[in-house]
Image (cartoon, rainbow, N blue to C red; front, side, top):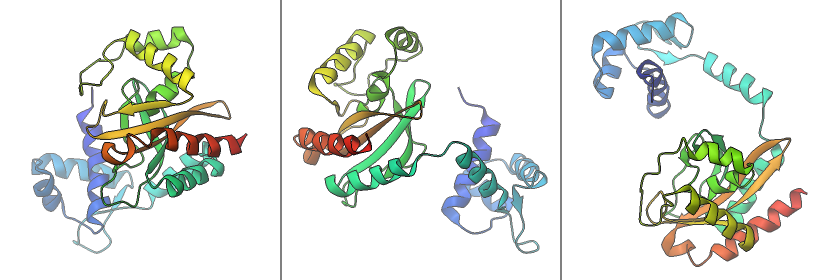
Amino acid sequence: MTVKQAENALQVLEYFAERRRPATAAEIADDLGWPRSSTFKLLGTLAARGYLYEPQARGGHYPSPRWLELAEQVAQADPLPPALQRLVQEVSAETGETTAISAPAGTHAMFVAVKESRHAVRYFAQVGDRVPIHASSAGRALLAQMAPDERQALYRKIDFARYSATTPMTPERVEAELAEAAARGWHQSNAEYTPDLAGVALPLSTSGRRLSIVVVGPVSRCLERRPEMAAVLARHVGKLG
């Protein structure tokens, strides 16, 4: 369930991130397909709270530095350790594939750090993207850090939708995947949620936080390389101690 007003406010910020220059309310309404009256009201509210300003008179709105100040304050209160930021960079450089660190977000795993592959054909990902916690190697590496009763409570909230022929459709199947991963030494996926993507993941635990690190790429390039990519992950994670 989403709250439309909150979704629209965030979409305005994403709009400016892509546009990178001021825009009038009329331009925003036209570009996003919104009614002009509600667009004017939303922009007026954001401006009144100090989140939008006009760099030039009648030149349109643009996000103010207040967004950055708030984001920096939040990040400083609970930062991702520099060692983990380096880990993402190093693993991506060695494997050549998109690498991400994930954290639990309800029934999803959310990327909190991403380094995209340099290949033209790659997994396009960014911080804030989410994948189902049960239907991804990144997510199951998080589930593996939970107690059985905690996982069972979470399963009751999951919509076991079929995203592909390989999507685990029941709690029992997810538990079997976790057992197989424990015996194998790493979590793996094959187009369970996103078509044509294969990945491997390992749990990360630092300062009491549940995290996972995943390497993902096209099936054509990565399916057979999963043991190799898992070995790279294990070696770099092992260096963290």
